[in-house]
Image (cartoon, rainbow, N blue to C red):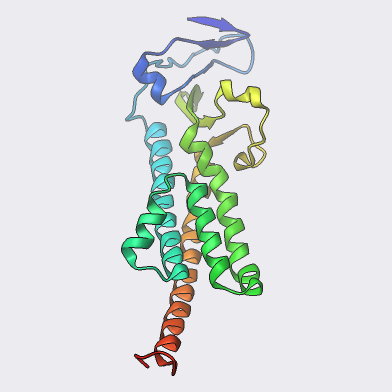
Length: 228
């Protein structure tokens, strides 16, 4: 174990590295030891309340995006008018989220007039893109565990930070919203926002589905249509 300026770090086992990329021990606000120091357990405990809370919200955020994917597929299906097997094959063979979002946007753009696409779909598209920046962070970057004390007891603080090696790119990370990392309160907020996004996408899928049904009905009743 080694320390710099009152902050101590220790090497982690391989299993712990996968869950907690790094951690710190904060004994006090100064270099002096407190009268009754809190004994901090370095070993990662997945059943600790802070760990359960953090990974619970992280899992809920991941799960919420699965429903966003479902709504995007429904929009794509109605916008294209393809048979379900065909639309599902095209949509789900694109594994990257930004690729799926792009083909949905293209499908809506081709189905609707430019004005309706701009006014009804574009704001929802932008909201989805904005929230996906945060999704990309917790999906692709490591977690950190900070060991601290609160009210005389150990209190671990978990976060998701930008991979150190990636910082050489000097990229902007709008998904952090001005912060240096994502904390449990950020995950709670993200889950609420994605939940609301999923509701709005579902409503839009219904609108697109109704539009597609009207188009099919008009085509079938057309004098040129032998089924009309």
